[in-house]
Length: 137
Image 1: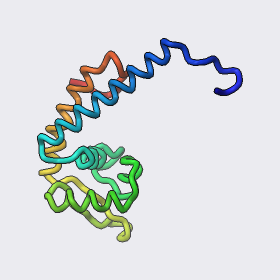
Image 2: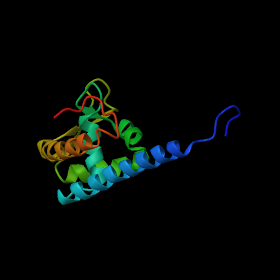
Image 3: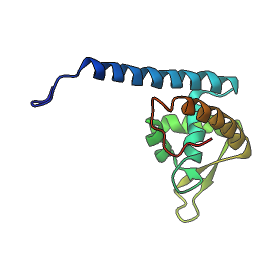
Image 4: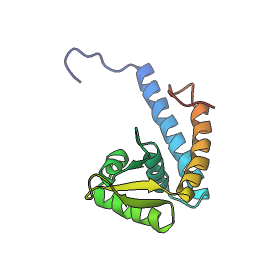
């Protein structure tokens, strides 16, 4: 504990416990629902982070590695599997030929949209636990 800081109270421990419980509950929901669509939780997150990358409709391996908190070579393997299943495609950047963009294909977009709608509903049910900006029905 840092000098000058008060020890955690029982109420704070309860709040932290509830927060972690609800995060895990949501993760478990996500794990179960994505598998019913025949993809893994990481594949869902890959599609989500491509579609949700700020300001554009693609992402790079490095950007996805950061968002997934993964090593770039692991992301390359994940992208390769998604590409083999017809969910994403790689394109060379027009301005910088060394840069590879990862774009969603219609199959990836369709799976992502259906799963994201289910996730949104689950998140809205947790509204009393989390403050969730920009998520609407």
